[in-house]
Image 1: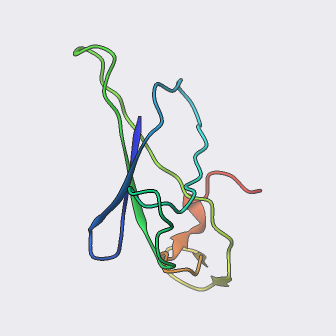
Image 2 (image 1 turned 45 degrees about the vertical axis):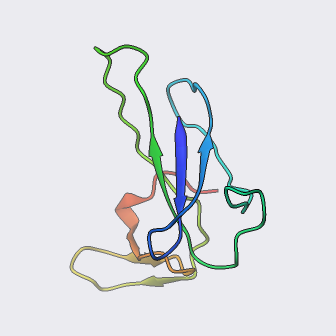
Length: 101
């Protein structure tokens, strides 16, 4: 499994090879380093997760989730409550929450 980190302009910041991982929830935390080993500048970054199947017949589906603090809740929308996550992340529907810490 690999995690690709990009900056707001889409420029590649780092690719982290996590190796083989089992099925189910997996945790990953980026240390903020760029590909050259130095610290990436403070800012908002995006990530994408990709896999390579163990065999050509096996399909691998990856669903990335983020852990983020809720900074506010917007009530009254037609789709139900929205959670504002701050930090440049888009608001998320309460129904999209998978786990609470």
